[in-house]
Length: 173
Image 1: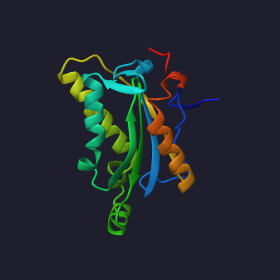
Image 2 (image 1 turned 90 degrees about the vertical axis):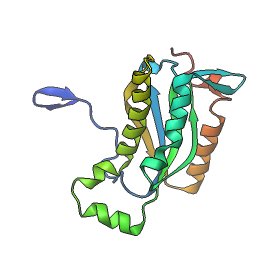
Image 3 (image 1 turned 180 degrees about the vertical axis):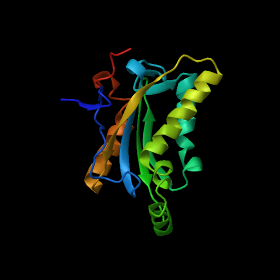
């Protein structure tokens, strides 16, 4: 049953309540377009061909470390209607201590702020260039806990375009 806040139903968070999402760790992220529309381009013979907004999504993803210097990007892929990527938060011990002393700092240096910044960059470009585009309001994350899982996910991302015909988002437009 859904919880209520101020007499209204609200969606329970998909985040792990027991985890600090500003912690150093690799995270597997999936971000979908609204209604899984194919805004980012199309796949032909296992290769992704970007639309204008798909190309910008690619550029914005690659620019994440410029805005969040403690982030290392690993494998990622822009698909017709979603993005998969591995984001590694890798703060120095000093950076980790710093944010713990400021109540407000974690919101600007955690996984949610990284994803939010990426989504805002793509949406801003679309708006400024009069491109029809919308994100799904939430995103999916998975905390990668071991090396076996890391390489399995990395391989999944790398092979995602080649496996598009079998993807659960394939037929949705």
